[in-house]
Image (cartoon, rainbow, N blue to C red; front, top):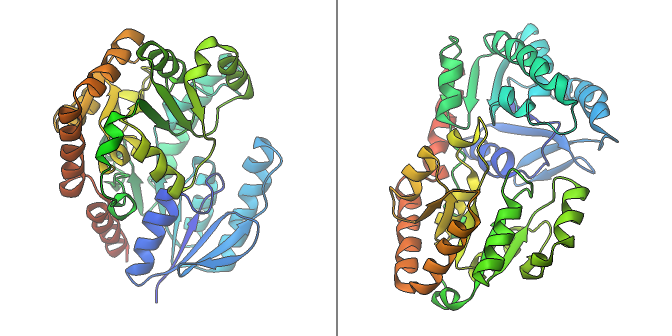
Length: 365
């Protein structure tokens, strides 16, 4: 049996893409799968062996001691193929490749652009660090056996540099959203957002629009900073917010069942117009009308499948009007939900992407 070792120093062990999609798909395909990730103990879950990493005290420790620990534990696993998920693990991938191991780099986002947005890094250093990283990433990536990207745009970037790149989207697992639609929810006056809570993800605009539309905004996730959380809570519009914190899949189902629409609003920045947020497809899979930013790629999905409304993410009145339209047109809202579910069943689901993943492994072998 071929041994696969998946590596992450950043993501939690039961990350949706890493564990529930890729690791479980590989295990079902007959691979012996080990996952190295931050966890409180070594374990076995759903046929996948978990090798634990201690939680680092800070970012610097994670990028030094934790990365070195990943490498040492990876060698102990003695796998045939190593599949890593974080840019800080590129040196680990290179060391493993130097030892003759097959290595896959899974690229979740455009790190060149995202580095420029890192609030913890001094502003005057961001562009310099981004360019240095970009050069290093592209040179290193040519050494790996395969590059997996979460978006088509990323795939084109790596392919243009003669890297062996494959686009595998982060589409949802249909079975996690296969519950009967609740027609009564369309009479409720609640909208939701599930995910990381930040200024760039328009958390302020969502709150202000919900207040203007006189609806409840359910938010589930962690705030990017305590300062932002405190600032939001101090606003008079916070009265419409129902804060859930981090939720599991059962709680997520309950939130979706209570909501008339799901938000996916990002401020414009270099990576936003080309991204394909997993949450967009989860809303669709759950039968929720989507209120999304009016970027070309997102409009092609949302308006192309007639499953929601695209708006200017900075225009509070426009966002509020979209909420009011969905509430005041329940039949059309239900139609949006059904069309979204149909699109996911036919085009945007993990069972399709799973085949691509297995083919990447077959090609390497």
